[in-house]
Image (cartoon, rainbow, N blue to C red):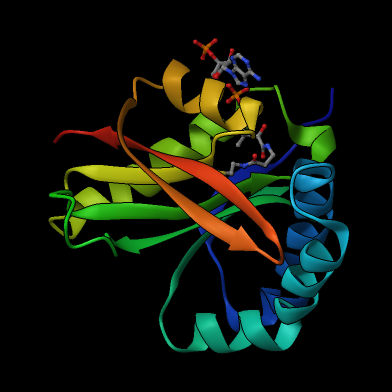
Length: 169
Ligand SMILES: CC(C)(COP(=O)(O)OP(=O)(O)OC[C@H]1O[C@@H](n2cnc3c(N)ncnc32)[C@H](O)[C@@H]1OP(=O)(O)O)[C@@H](O)C(=O)NCCC(=O)NCCS
């Protein structure tokens, strides 16, 4: 019998290239057909290894889902950025590589990020998702999130609606 090592841990600067690769793959799949191609490409290129290295070095909280020696997903999180919404913390991004989706890992990563935020007194939580990202919307609903706000974001010439899900402490 063999044991598979799966762990959730904080990212270190030496993980930057692997996180960038995971981000690239996850975003390309999640947003194809939603965000216009050229804009999506720009967003991905901007988030290369140097961007991640700098973010991790400056103390951004990035949790990684590691499956054996592969980075299968990541979540980054911190204080809620929308001052008009009375929530303490925010998960800015939560992404899994396609082959690791639908296996319960998203829930595990979400729970780990939420727990880490609560440890630093950020107990209530918000997450934004593009309304057209059905998988994300259904996922946050399944995790008990309530739609609490709506907004929109421009990607090139396309304006996309987004929805905020909230969890009280
Ligand atoms: C969205 C995402 C993080 C969810 O992670 P996941 O590992 O696939 O989801 P899980 O297997 O942990 O599912 C957790 C729960 O959500 C439900 N769920 C997940 N996706 C769903 C969907 N598309 N439709 C309905 N329910 C869904 C599951 O049934 C499960 O419910 P249960 O625990 O009550 O059985 C992952 O699919 C992903 O990375 N997608 C692409 C990137 C993305 O869209 N990220 C979010 C950006 S805001």
